[in-house]
Image 1 (cartoon, rainbow, N blue to C red):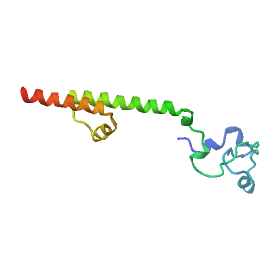
Image 2 (image 1 turned 180 degrees about the vertical axis):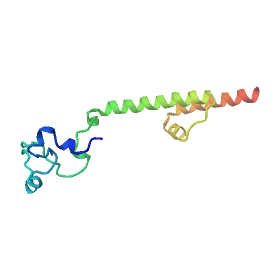
Image 3 (image 1 turned 30 degrees about the horizontal axis):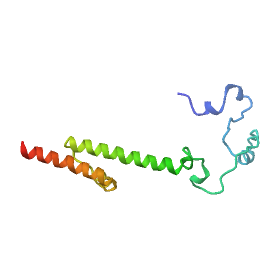
Image 4 (image 1 turned 90 degrees about the horizontal axis):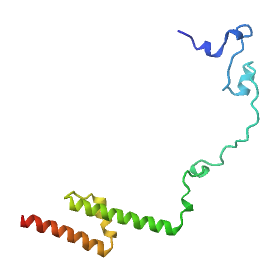
Length: 127
């Protein structure tokens, strides 16, 4: 089994006994008598404060206009309505979130759901 020393020393280093260390602080290395090449200047600067405000957002939400936001809300409401309507027709139980979302449907949509429900109840009673 190879020892960890094989990582730090190579066969060519046995003559000079130099340690291959690339992640040690240069000041500490100098104190210990190990000489490391100084790193070139880095243009990276640490952030002034912590938090996600230092990062670029992956998705820029500010580019959406109010119109497209409103359209997507309307589409979402319609998708919820269609899904709930199908669940009622299939005799599936509605989740609490689906029941809550029904509050925001238009009166026309509410009447349609009630009508579907009443037809189902009527069919059950008559059969």
